[in-house]
Image 1 (tube, rainbow, N blue to C red):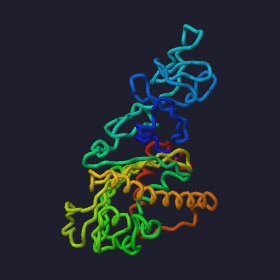
Image 2: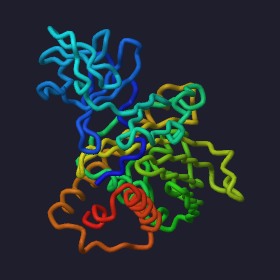
Image 3: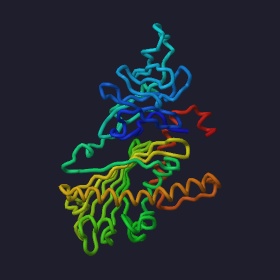
Image 4: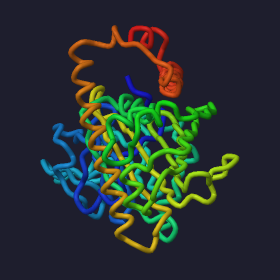
Length: 348
């Protein structure tokens, strides 16, 4: 079951060019395309004539043309042309989905179109500020449920074990990090303090730290699949009274988890550096280092999904460091319950 009355990242804006882009979201086949006015549209990826996938067609002046028999659909899903036929029946249409292009993303609403309020989209203006926050972005297909990837981001104690060669560090520093948590209507915010800690390899490469440092990580989970991150670091003793304004190293990461199926998802992520902003190699180096770490996450979570599919979740236990993750899960369950009839939710 999926939360549908929510905005999901459907694609990076630069993924959608001249050719239609097929993508499965919440287990529904979608086709994304740009019309003649460069506006992004999303339709169910099936022609209402003979069921051919619309992504096998092409974009023409009037809209998206089916590659099987040439029917053309506009961005609302209405058929505007049938070869050899003047009268078009009103039912000759396909489902359309609300989409918004914002901050380098294309967002899609999979639920009730009447409830699709663009004001609810998570803002990420850093993608529009290449001077102060130059960034790189990509998408990883993950063979695991979207919630497992969000779990991974909500419990960062794994950094000391999974990411020792990049953004991690001494495991005890992460397990013993001081946590400050604030609940929000759609999730939670938390801050992790790791003072007087050893600088991980990625940080040393970025700004040349020597000796111990103070580290801070601020996360916000916005249900159902957005995680916003700010990370900072400075020489040991800098972060007095919680002031991080003198961070020698700082970067922002966006994590967008969009369900493909019940057991697979799309991981949209970006890294924006707030250090050495006039040096393109710094931006690329950060992206490469973070990307290597996220591929480590991908390997672990995909293996986790395979084992859970085999043996189930019945024997799993929670530990003290699961607090943020558990609140995230409860928020997602609440939103799902609000959408589903009681009997359907109970059965699930």
